Amino acid sequence: MSLDQYVTLGRSGLRVSPLCLGAMTFGEEHGWGSSVEESRQIMDRFIDLGGNFIDTANGYTKGHSEKIIGDHVGRDASKRDRLVIATKFSSNLYPGDPNAGGSGRKSIVAACENSLRRLQTDYIDLYWLHNWDIHTPIDETMAALDDLVRAGKVRYLGVSDTPAWKVAQANVTARFRGWSSFIGLQIEYSLLERSVEQELVPMASEFGLGITPWSPLKMGALSGKYTRENAGQVKADRGAYIASALNEKTYALVDELGVIAEAHDSTVAAVALAWVQVQPGVTSTIIGARRLAQLEDNVKALGVKLTTEDLARLDTLTKPTLGFPQSMQPMFPAIHNGGTTINGVYAPSILIQPGEKPY
Image 1 (cartoon, helix red, strand yellow):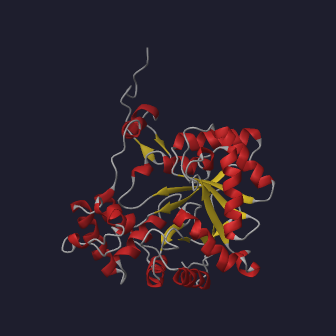
Image 2 (image 1 turned 180 degrees about the horizontal axis):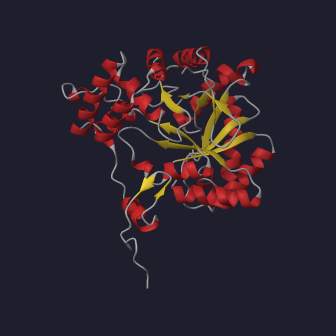
Image 3 (image 1 turned 60 degrees about the vertical axis):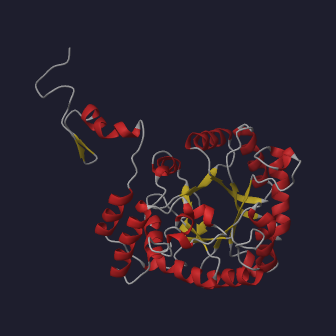
């Protein structure tokens, strides 16, 4: 597979590249991002390779990430129109103003106008709710977003960092009222973050939401740079994000990734990305690149074809223990199936044996 092997995002006709360029690192306002010039080089190379999906947010580098994208591609209609530009709302960039953040109508409309201005475009291809606002009714949020779609300022809607039950409520509400609904789900998903497989991943499948994982390398912990030997050499700039993930479980996983990478003539990072990309429901994986070389390395993941044995070895090290009620799921066939095979699943009945009769 390559970047120009496009896929549709969820239950929609929106075509996106199998890897999405994450722009959280565009700008140096936080002390560890990419310069304006290198951000432009990264975008150009991504586009040259066939990538068409760029993801940012109004809160990334205080809005500078959006402006960098707008200055580079927003002014160029030939570039802008072939790209799928995604951005997010929720972040409050105006201290002292309680209505400048969250998911209320006033905040959403203002955030959209400001993002359009910074991106220098008339429309946003995919507009994400960045994180759940517990203070705003979801029907108010969905109605405001539908207004933006009907006004032509937004093409599609997505949701990030929100509980599965709230996403389900949002989409059911929208569909019953004839509003636009979410087509994409952005969640943290990696070999070191699989708790999403309990509720969020099955929900996405049920509602036809295309999953776009963020932090597929767990903030760099699965990049291959960090081992037992250099554990004390984490850079100070983003060390707080990575340090908590550097433990024996991670080192054992990196060891196994290294073995698999060697067999595929690849890298630890590429194998970790390849694992995420083949998980059920995943449409386009968000890759961050602070340097052009990192982009080149990450794209190589599309050439890694993991075997069934590779996947089983990684699953052994990382398979999550699901809580209630999924923890009871293995026993349900013995209760439901009556000793028959349904969709390939068989279990002997534990309620009543053949020949016995119920009372």
